[in-house]
Length: 386
Image (cartoon, helix red, strand yellow):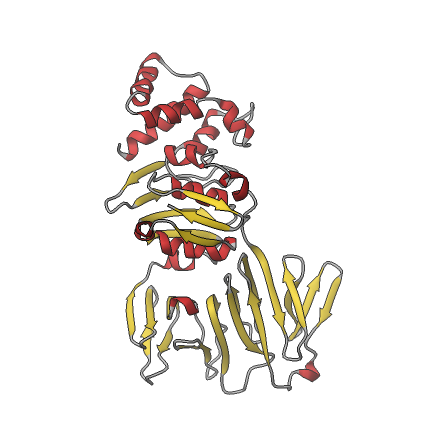
């Protein structure tokens, strides 16, 4: 079924809920419903307004147009088992806009056995980090307790006031601070030079209390987005397990998880120089390009999908022809889950789609299960994929 056909069916289903179908529209919807057992099941499940009302998707005062905005979607199954999911609009509850089938299924109770009960406890990540200072002290940071710069000093800010961590008189002490963001977390930090860093789940940023006069050096493991403060003749250098990135002032995404065994740098704006550990040659990136340094120290430059690369920073999941294995690696870090593959073949299934990272794992699973090629079961924080 084409995009416009399903868009039309979405409108008809909404009108049937509102009891506003003409005879011709009723026949059209009836033909679609009788076209397959799958269509009949969907229609039977979602024709009642109570289903949406129970999920806070509409109330008696909602207009037809608002309801339509919640259910109008488009779905097209691509070759190679890929699902292309195109956003059309967001309802007030921020559901992912997929297809009529996607949206309707997105709000369903489509789970097997005990999986629904277990999956409900797996929540989306939020702002959290552990700050370890060079003097051995540690602080747990979250949305209520944050790290900030106050007159050039690092400080902990909470609802009760501000506690200065790094007094000016201690700045000359040499030592490395570490910001660790655990699984199920994300954190933003501003360094003493004004550089902003967004740190993704399961990542570590090592930085000094104050930078040397000739260069600014930090170490990174995991994934981070940098907005480097520009200073002439004061380069900013990021060291990773697989290479280094040198900049003066620019915005880019850096990804260097140990288990992935590579450094991936995606440039958004400005200029960066990327090098491996085994060569002094530096590759210059231009905006919209990605440099990949592999574990054998080779460097490849490819055209980037910038939206996909930085989507986590913008609180979104965005996948473009990604394998299910890649997608579930992202999910594992954000939702703090363990993945067990009952079917090795499923690892290579291709998907495209978008989902707000504020959504809990139950919604993430619904998006994937729409293909009817993948099923999930959940026990505790272990997810089995078949």
